Every structure is written in structure tokens, then in C-alpha cells.
Length: 178
Image (tube, rainbow, N blue to C red; front, side, top):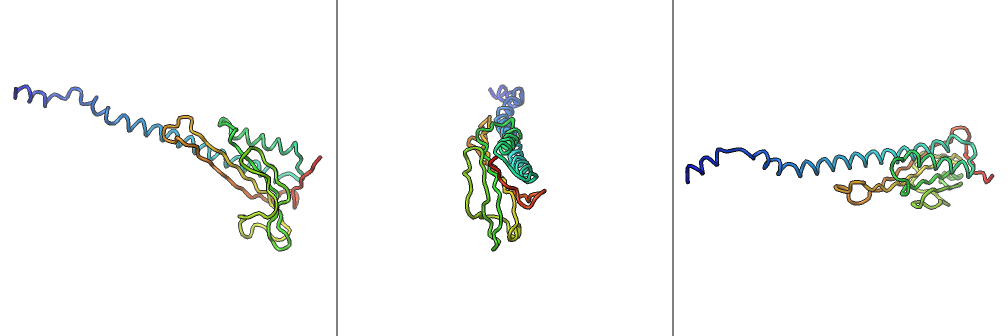
């Protein structure tokens, strides 16, 4: 019996299979984790690009109509593709500092269900951005990302982005009902 036992200790056939059985689950989990994290980062960058682009399109205009705003929101949806657009929410707000320098909403438009139309005073505007009488366009985007794999990111993550842009061609981008 001792001879058989010694021979069994020296036999290393199958050791690779045992090592693989220990390492494979960790490697597979690492693969899923890296894949889901990378896709999530791409989605976050696209949400940021949406906020930047839709705000910039409005800041380049002089007067915005309802059909133009629809087109701008459609551009935002095209940028977020191929991710689903059902959880994409966008809000564009024109703000103007009153005579005391306090930012107030001039007009606000939304797309999606994550935001409501703003009115009244605006909080969170960076100090020194607006002097009395100056205007800016505030572009906000919220996107709830759900991983298609849902292995290491089983719950949705919400990305939010906010950009302040000064009007380029005029001192104030106005809203037109025409």
C-alpha cells in the first residue's frame, strides 16, 4: 500500500484541471466585471456628450422654437444610441441674473420623465458665472444605465451631467412660441 501511495503523490496528471477549477470562476467574474464597467463608462461619457452638445446647440442659437427644441432633443437621443433612450432625460434652461446678481429662470424645456420644467430662482450656479443682467444656458442630462449582463452591476446606475454655457451670438437666447 505504501508503494501505491508514493506513486500517487508523484503523479501530477490532472493537476492543471484542478487549478483551472479554482481559477476559472474568479477569471470569469473579473471578465464580466471589466466588461460591465467599460460599458458603463462609455454610457457615462455619452451622457456627458449629450449634455454638452444639446446645451451648445442652444447656446449657438439666437431664438429657439418648439420644433428646434424637439430637433435638439432628438440629437441627444441619437448621441446616446445604441443605448436605450427610454431612461434619458434632458432639460435646457435659460437663466438670467437679476439686478442683484441672483440667477432666475427665463424659460425651461424638458424631454423625458426625469426632470420637470424649472421656474423661479436657480441654485447651484457657480460663483462668478453671471454678473447682473447676464444670461447662460443650463443643460442637464440624467440617464439611468442598466447593464445588459447584470452580473457584477445588477442594479441600474444613474449618470447626471450639468453644463453651463454662455450664448454665443446674442446676449440672451430667447424662446419663441412661433
